Amino acid sequence: MKLQKVLSLARKAIDEFNMIEDGDKIAIGISGGKDSLTLLMALHGLKRFYPKKFEIHAVTVDLGFGIQDFDKIKQLCAELEVPYTIVKTEIGDIIFKDRQESNPCSLCAKMRKGALNDAMKSLGCNKIAYGHHKDDIVETMLMSLIYEGRIHTFNPYTYLDRMDLTVIRPLIFMNEVDVIGFANKYELPIAKSKCPADGYTKREYIKNLLIQLNHENPGVKDRMFTAIMRRKIWNDIV
View (spheres, rainbow, N blue to C red):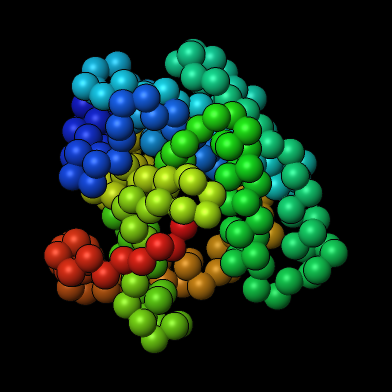
């Protein structure tokens, strides 16, 4: 997928859900993966011509595994002239060594987002952008249905009144396969996570299940996504 198409899909989401206003300073959560780097490219590209003027600041929460190299991401941000902040934490040790969590993902996500929210507030940002795409939206709905007995998923736009922060997800109209194609085409400097739980989570199981369902019933993922958009079955999952 070319950058122009990515910009078009991101703008569609931003316009439809009124994600950006004049004067916004948006922190982009950079995990080092393909999704967040695609989001960085999208918002950097839109910033040049979008009618509402906004600033962006890339932020990474380093979980402290000590083996994830962000140097190439630093270089990319320098080339794009986007400020980049790395927040050092010991979340990895707390989760896997101190607490030895058997189901680490939920606590890790809360701690990571807490560190990210604190960082963006200190940087003067009023919004944070996550790189969740269409597959993430549908997968989260399936996880909610199967494991919680309810039907909910990410909200494209969430205001957190207790923190006076807003979460936006400009990539919700992009398929994961298109994100992969874009990242490969533009050789984005992916810094893959070294999390010990990677590949062994409930989300990974649901991801594979959705792939199987879509293979056996072509178009089922898009129909699920259309149902979500039509019924607005999201909540304030952040």
